[in-house]
Image (tube, rainbow, N blue to C red; front, top):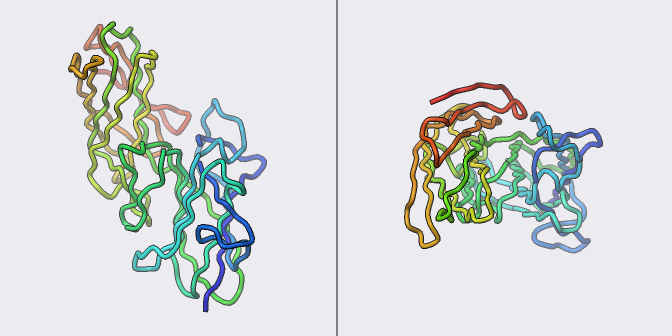
Amino acid sequence: MKHFISISSFFLSALFVLTSCEKPLLTEDNINGQKADGNLTVSISQFEQTPFSSLTRTALSDVCTHINFLAYTPDGLRVANVDQEVDDPNFGVATFFLDEGEYQLVVVAHSSKNNPTSTDFSRIRFSNASGYTDTFFSSSSITIGEEKVDMDVSLSRIVALCRFVITDDYPTNVAKMRFRYTGGSGAFNGSTGFGSVNSTQTLLLDVTSGQKQFDLYTFLHENTGTIHLQTTAYDSDDNELYERVFEVPLEKNKITWLTGAYFSSFTTFSVNIDTDWAGEDHRTF
């Protein structure tokens, strides 16, 4: 016998905010696996992190541009999913139609260009092409039976962030910056939220606009870790002009700032941990 599952996400009026997520299309008809009514309602009640000090808005769209609701069997088979975008009607409300039984419900909020690959419960994966962003997550065991179930879920940030800041001027021939880093993961486990593969993550950007701050996200394999970061400057013809390598300590739910004069000096970079996420540390090299 089949049953409906309705999943809704919303913010409490006093909820603090962090980044950006996506929405679903809901009508009385079945659209992309969704139903207007069901026997399980899941609500995002809060995000369990210290908010960015610069953000005070409380709309769900301020936290993410995508939300993915994923239902798996206990052995990791994905049986239903609803992928939402921020401009969809009823953003934050999704429904599933499931048999009675046991399931693992995973909710992922992010601002990547595309949805993660989610068929493998142990490797919910983002790609270099889609980009890595601030990401929030919950994983809950649920039982679908005869009675309707209402539950709240609280999403936790599962990424660490290296914020790379160049303080000197770009040489006139620099047109692109590439950031290539290993030690973290582009995929995470649907049960723990920790990184589940050894990835080479890459960000290549045109810097002719003068951009000097770059955010490099990763899923760590445990609460702390270190990424090996290779930074390369190119001209408009992709000729390599400058290259520097850094070992950057990271911690989940914290920003590590790596700041300094990239082109004019090789001795003035410093590292510190941003208190807007949690904790503070200062390092020099």
